[in-house]
Image 1: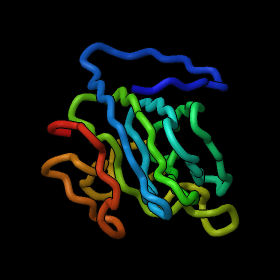
Image 2: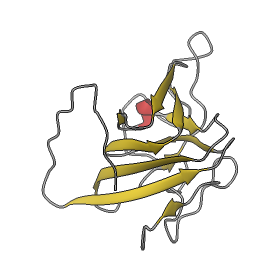
Image 3: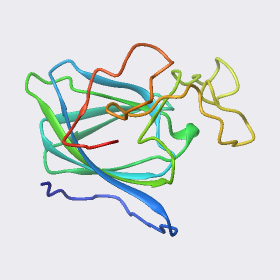
Length: 161
């Protein structure tokens, strides 16, 4: 399904009763996954195209076909993903999540340094599990994004979210 090279260290400790989901995404040219975060570890491999992620600090990370990424965890790791290329972007993502958690939680764009407290909008300083909006990654039944527009991208072949 996917074969990629991880160029950063990955320390993974997974507690019992962890939800594990393998999802494949296809993002058309100009498509995006709006600002979101994950409540558990996500490792993804780009199988076609080039993924451009914008992180909470405003920096951009470009990941090409055959490369792998490790997504940040929690509201402070808010990020967005785009396909800025002319061909379809495809990636496979392996999610390690707390039971009952969505694959992803929609979030407001982060507050940039000098514009506020430096904490992503919709989160609090206490690190609570409060989620801005009851949502989820595309394709999760019964979950509807409440921040911004609807998720434009749906996972391929994920049954029951």
